[in-house]
Image 1 (cartoon, helix red, strand yellow):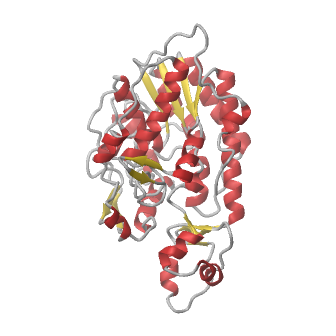
Image 2 (cartoon, one colour):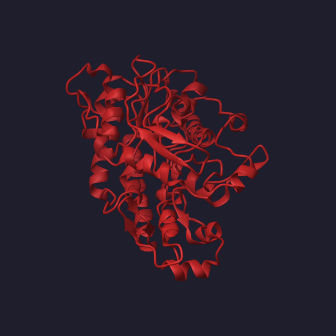
Amino acid sequence: MLHKCCSVTFLLGLIVTAPIYGQKKADLSNLVVVGDSLSAGYQNSQLIDSGQVHGYANVIATQAGVDLYLPLIGPPGYPQVYAVAPSYAYVTGLTPEPRLDYRQTLDVAVPGFTVGALVGLPSSCPPDYSNPIDVMAVEILNPNCSIHPGPTELAEAVSLKPTTAILWVGSNDVLFSLLFNSTDPTDIGTFYTEHSLATTTLAHASKSLVLANIPDVTRTAYLTSVPDLAAILNLPVATVYAVFGLHLGDMVTPYAFPAIQAMKTSLTHLPDSGPQGPIVIRAARILQIRATVVAYNIAIAIEAAFSGATLVDIYSLFNNLADHGVVVNGRTLTTDFMGGLFSLDGVHPTNTGYAIIANEFIKTMNGSLRTNIPLANVGLISLTDPLIFPPIVRAASTGHVDVGMADALRSVLGH
């Protein structure tokens, strides 16, 4: 589906891409990053140093010549995920792993946080070890339980006195609808109030504020369209529609595949959900989620205009990548599963995907904040990206996110 109106900010005329006359060059010496798993460098359903260092935030900092002092989590990461090839993975444990570097981090993003958690959820001390989000929040915001109760992510960011701050949050407020049964997106009124609080607070606390809007989470590799499902099953599309009770515009989650396997010869319609989570995301739900993302992004654009923040249009970037892919080193990378832009959990980017996102931030910041950050070399990064698979490996894959990866994602975000 081609998204012709892919730039919400353009339609509103609120995107800030040109420097204001007389504006001073942004000071990046104390760059502070605020957000969720995307800003933390999460990858393959896991927080681990090999992914964190390739996150978009660290790429921006590296290119700008500054240090975020990342709260690096060494192997085996958190949670512990055992993966054998792209088609088989499972969670082996939720044992907390200590940070490798206990210096004060300037990347205070916490995986699993919604906007509401960012502005209002203090990190406990000690953490609730049954709640993976709480474990990561304490490790990132309040290591060694030095404060009781610990700070909220927003309060921690303000305390760091950023010269420039990056705020990218809100994806989980709508993504959770795809991961968990009976879960609606955060209503737009609540989202606007909470995101506006974060924006206003950081705008006052920093000399320059950079906001990013929300990608269309229905266009990630976590979901599979009916035509793609038919291709994976080697069945005519019409047969898949008829046999599994699917309709035009429906999409399925990773949990559809074991459900189909369990049917064997007694084929019947796929249920909309199971004990583990949603199985079929109906077309009407897809449209609702997409409309919610647009509403969120309108709110973020308005906030950017009123606070004088620079707005990075990640929504349009993701839609363009989903529609056309991107050529890197002569090869077209896509947002499909194992297409080179999403990691094995289907939600978080690969090293290459993060570098492309970083460059979108850098281009916008250079244009609006008079910075001169050099772009990351995406081609060079892709050459050592372990998640850009040779065509023969990709052809032999299942063609969808493994249930083990989905379980790992939900085990962390489901609390």
